[in-house]
Length: 362
Ligand SMILES: NC(=O)c1ccc[n+]([C@@H]2O[C@H](COP(=O)([O-])OP(=O)(O)OC[C@H]3O[C@@H](n4cnc5c(N)ncnc54)[C@H](O)[C@@H]3O)[C@@H](O)[C@H]2O)c1
Image 1: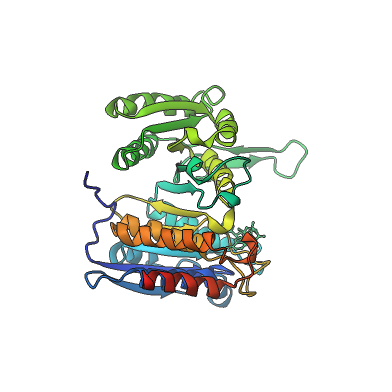
Image 2: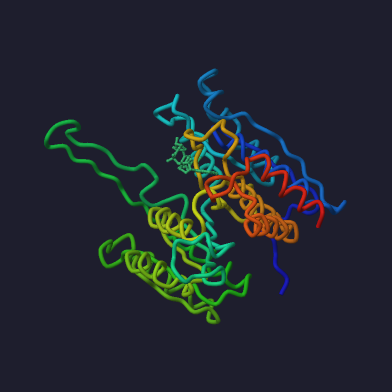
C-alpha cells in the first residue's frame, strides 16, 4: 500500500525553527543536528530558518508573534520545529499564549497527534509490560472544545461570583478529527479506533461526537470501532494498554489522556507531538515545557525533541529518515546513553552528538 505523505513537499523542505525559551533553546539545536545527520541522500535538501520569538524578544521589544508571521509561515515553510515557551520573567505567559496558541488556531492545526510508544521496557511504570505492549496514537482535537476562550465572569471577586467556560464543538471540527483518526488507522494498517467522550454527562456537546462517530465509522468497515467514556478509558489504558491502536477525543480529554500515555512510555523527556493540518504548514514540538528549573545546566533530555523531528519528517513524506531518527533514539536508550532524568549522566549536547554520529554511521 503506498502511503501518501500529509505534506507533499517533494525532495526539498523549508523548516522554520522556533526554539523559544529555557530548554527549548538547548534541545532544538540537537534536533536540527540529528535531522541533518539523518539526511544522507543527495536527493533531499532541507533549509532551516531560525526565528528568535520568545521571552527575550518579548521583554526587549514587546513583540510576541510579529505582524505577518502567520501568513509568512503558511506561505513560505513546510513545517515548524518548535522548542518550548515559558519564562519566569513573564508571569502572565502572554508571549507563549500569543505565539503557540496563536499558531495553533491561526494555522488551523486541528490535529494534535501524540504517539505513545515504549522504546525500552525499563522506562514504563507499569509492572510486567514490555515495549510491544505500549504502542498507540492519541489524536486530540486541537482547535475547539473548552480551550477556545469563550466565557466570562459574573459578579467577579464577590461571594456570588459565577464563572462560565463554554465548550465549543462544531460538526465540521468533530468530523474532521474523527475522520483523521480513521484515515490514519487505514493508512498504517491499524485495526482499532477508540473514540472517547463523556456523552452520558455532556449530553449536548458529546451527543454530537456520538452521532458523528457513528456516521463516520460506517465508511471504515475494516476497522474495529469502539467507544469508551473518558473515565473508563483512563482506567483501561493503565490496566491493559495493548487494547489500543488509535484513540480520538476532544481537546480537554486529549490533553489529559495523552499526558497519562506519555508517562507510560518514559515521561516528559521522551514525549513528542505534532500540531497538524494535513496538506498545510504544521508545527512539531516536544510535549515538555521550558523547564526553568534545569535550563542552562546542559542536562535537558533532547530525545523528546528528536522524536518530534521524526514525526515532522514522516509528515513531509521522508519516512526512512523519520524511521532512522526513531531507531537512533531506541539505540541510545538501549545503551543507556541518556540524561539524568532517565537515570543517566550524559549532557544534552553529548546525547545529541551520539545520536548524530549514530545516524551518520548507519
Ligand atoms: N508547549 C510548551 O511550550 C509548554 C508546555 C508545557 C509547559 N510550558 C511552560 O514551561 C514552563 C515550565 O512548565 P512546567 O515546569 O510545568 O513543565 P516542564 O515540562 O517545563 O517541566 C516539568 C518537569 O519535567 C522536567 N523536564 C521537562 N522536560 C525535560 C527534559 N527534556 N529533560 C529533562 N527534564 C525535563 C523539568 O525539569 C520539570 O521538573 C512554564 O512556563 C509552562 O507554561 C510550555
